[in-house]
Length: 332
Image (cartoon, rainbow, N blue to C red; front, side, top):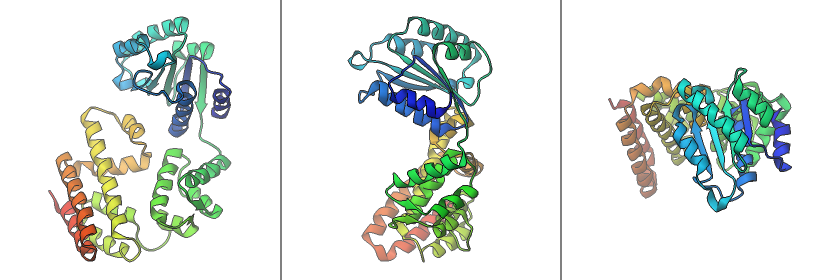
């Protein structure tokens, strides 16, 4: 079944005990799970009735305990298993046994299994017989246009039609990648109500000049001279606070990825937990070895001091920002 029909089933209250979500469209899967959780749990979502586990972190005992313990207010419970293929082979056999018992005895609980692909086998067979197998393919162009427009509007802004076409023409059709571009556009637009073709050109680097994202790339590469040059160019068009906020956001991403890697998370798990496109994650990972976690945390503290200093003395905020970039790029 396709995504649209599956959503219509949910909204009509047709709930099944098992859903298997297959495909590369991560955001659509997340949207489906979000709607499902709201339909079955209403406003009573808590750790007692809603649990998300990744295949690499799956523990049979925790799964069994969750299903056997009582839920909040005695209602339904939702268990989401993401990236099934990352589960240890030994755990898959135990999980299959649990799944067969779950399907035959279950009354109130709902199980969701997600993966990019799933070969023929007993789990897929159970999904087709007792639940719903939903394929999440890449949306067509008309759907992407509508998705970009609604994504911008939910942020309280509007976007010119030609600007949407330009954005889609220069980015792949992965929704996660497009979402990242929308988030950047919202930052870039600032107080402007309408996102124009000119703004999209600037974001994509289709016109001369530099953007905040050029600055972030220079910082990742520890290119101090280049970063300072870009900063001074940006200050003609962007407020210092906006520039520093973007640097802060980037460093927070790097810290989080460092922590996840330290816990043994693999590439796909990091990508999905962080909500990053392949391109953005690859860029960050390529430069991550140049910074230790302790350095990044130190940089974050410097940024907080920068926020305070620039508020206290706005006339010196340029010097403060320049010193921040020097310290980040020159630190060893």
